[in-house]
Length: 123
Image (cartoon, rainbow, N blue to C red; front, top):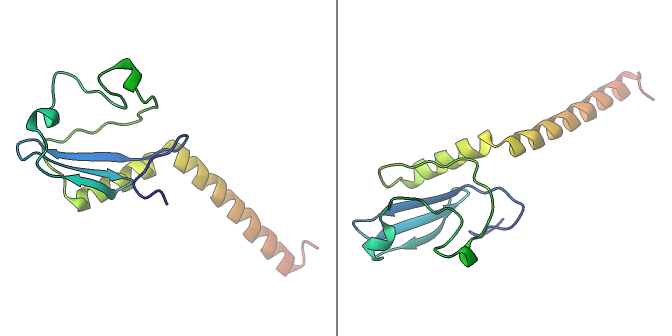
């Protein structure tokens, strides 16, 4: 459990819901609300001519990292929509699918071994 924080070498689904006219922004980590800000400066929330991801205005503020998918919506998402988006992104993550495949394979081997032991085929 990460309590709204991100850590190195781990994939996360980060979501920012912004209502620039109202000055509101909610941020989510893996579909869970991380922060909710109200009354922010409208100029800081408006989408400009480019998007900076994982960085700041100066080279020294760059955070590094990789982005697999970037989704932009033209409206503030509900908590349910954020949760659904997280589930979709999580399930589409190749790293996650690979881990599930390994786990499924291990369970299959374990069940096969158990069945063979019960049948007396494996001693």
